[in-house]
Image (cartoon, rainbow, N blue to C red):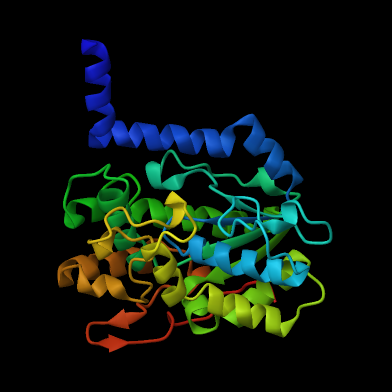
Length: 308
């Protein structure tokens, strides 16, 4: 009994939660069932966590369901989107590629050759916003970190350095995969229907019906997803607030471009911007900040290359 009590205390601690989360992620991404499912998929949706993957998953899943006129028994946040079990639809699978948010720069996988026969949708977001959102995920939802945001920002594992290195790996490796489509969170915010149309065309959906896309964009809007999360409409932890009284614990936390300026000190922002300018591949167009204090811009300056 004493040993069991000690085990329970360990699992309830931040480090215990971290190991439990990492074990669950390992099983979901590298288990035999997961590897077989990945091989069957036509397209993989890849991202660093906190780049809007839940939002894009719901948007694409709803659009596919509309296309198939499939309204019953749809899990809009399933790892395998509807095409995995409905004939005639592209099979899109959500990938936790490398689980980079638990790694240092040195421990990241440097090759993406395993995807040489796959179409890849790479979803990215301004690293400044990602690192802030990742901090709240770690502290509020996972409850696996007890440090301050400033301490997390400079952490060697899962923070800004890891995000930039992960992006750089993909910029270098993008030509080694079967097909590549870059999607930026900021562009999704500006035109969710247009981006969904482009992604689904890349995935092989034909024909593209505009009314299906428009309805999916409304269904997966931030406002609707926030209401679904508040009411636990989907009955899943993937869209359920850790603490309904704490807005920072919601999966749909802010959905804001440039929100990092509300949380970080000027010297921390300056450090981030210098790191990004000096180390991040210009392919992504994030060399200049999306916002300056008190001045918002729609998207980062520059247009990265991506699939048409």
